[in-house]
Image 1 (cartoon, rainbow, N blue to C red):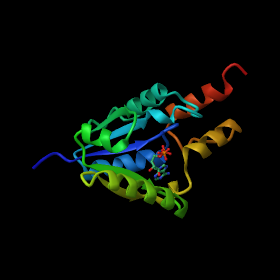
Image 2 (image 1 turned 90 degrees about the vertical axis):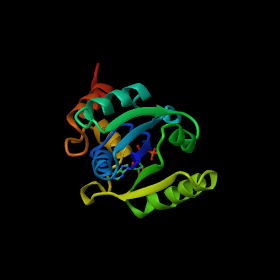
Image 3 (image 1 turned 45 degrees about the vertical axis):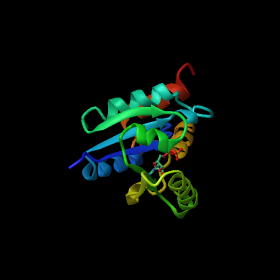
Length: 163
Ligand code: ADP
């Protein structure tokens, strides 16, 4: 049987326990998961693409079936090049649905070879987003339950170093 590889694309600015939950659950379904950091998310980002890749690589180092990459341009082109057939996206509140639905339809329009699979968030992470993490950290609030320690330190360095 062929290996089933899925791509989990996103900005991951920075990676949260919500993302990691989706990755771990996807790893139970697929032989391999490529976590793909979108290069076009460089603008308005707190962390550079390289910083995001480095954090993800370190955090995922004990999961040999997960690989971190970056991509530019059309997602479906990248997915085909990577030898994958499935795109994984996470769904949180209803508000995610509209945009994700549009994106999935557009990708399906471009090619039928790539299927989008939605995974429902786990309840504790329903309202967790990279944006809220940045906001809380910026305001000196606790983010320990939202991101791994490595990401917390990176946030501290961004917001508090040199103050
Ligand atoms: P994007 O900018 O592409 O939305 P994100 O890094 O914000 O990138 O998210 C990547 C994917 O992970 C998206 O499908 C998003 O819905 C999903 N995601 C983000 N946070 C969570 C969470 N807390 N629970 C489940 N899925 C999530």
